[in-house]
Figure 1: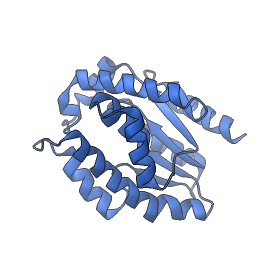
Figure 2: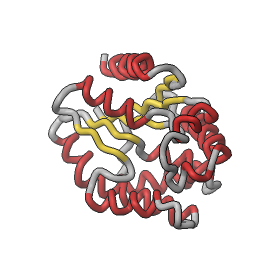
Figure 3: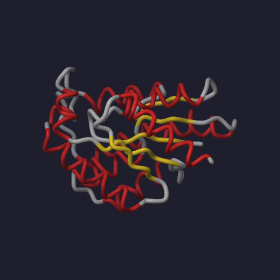
Figure 4: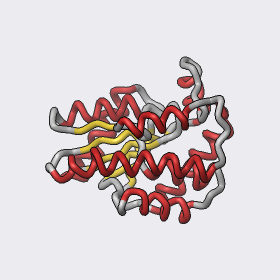
Length: 198
């Protein structure tokens, strides 16, 4: 099974992805996006660099380049071997960030992501819904990257974008309220994944 975790910055995706992967067993492949390959990690450095000002379409295409490499080198082979994959972000993040928040359009971004991944989408996506103001306090504890540095208004737009994604794909996306403590959110995430597998 291919599982992605999505949500605004500070929603706890990285923590919950690690907890989920550990709960599902040693054979699980845990990756992050952008990243997960040498090329992807280099692209991640560009995308996160707060000194750069990227055009929204260029930003999207960089994400898609890293994603194409991740599917070709890691996700595809893992799925061929019958292994579960847990991914910290995937194409839905581009729909929310670049499609909605950056104004490129939801359908346009979905089509570009679909092309980049050869039609690969997660079997289930856990959307960690968090209050942007609360998430901002979590981010405040660390050095902000390019996206986090844009502040609360971007995160509010992204949250709206994720709500749109959830409305468009109710068969795939499971919403988990992420404002609680780490353990209770993990229990809810695990329950959703096990419910899909049952």
